[in-house]
Image 1 (cartoon, rainbow, N blue to C red):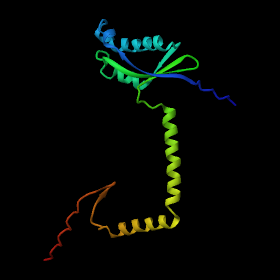
Image 2 (image 1 turned 30 degrees about the horizontal axis):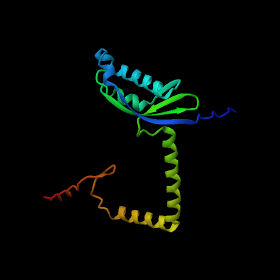
Image 3 (image 1 turned 135 degrees about the vertical axis):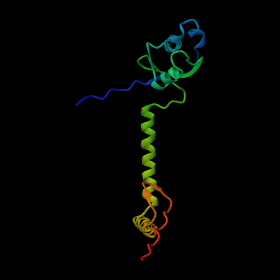
Length: 162
């Protein structure tokens, strides 16, 4: 059995607006986004006294969204430093995967309790019976493709004999 890793506690959390234009103006045009990433790393280390910096994937995508030649001129980030001295940098409105899982599980749990209270077995049976009635009353000459109903086709004209 493997021992679970302890997650380091967050010591501090700050929101910074980092100016990038003054840094990447002196570099070659194709190196601007790369220079912006290194500027963010240096800024966070300098202002939080962290040993290393982890940049989130969404923050990285927002830096490279305009391509290598056109990064944003400034960016607002949220930096949190843990007890081991590692700074995690993300967008201020970004939700981490762990937070997203917790939120999903809480919603699922609350939804399950509400459904159990509101629906009794009798109600479920009635809903199924109503659905069966609706299916039976639907005209047979309508074509149904998947979930989409197609307009009615006219009935073929009776053929006259002789």
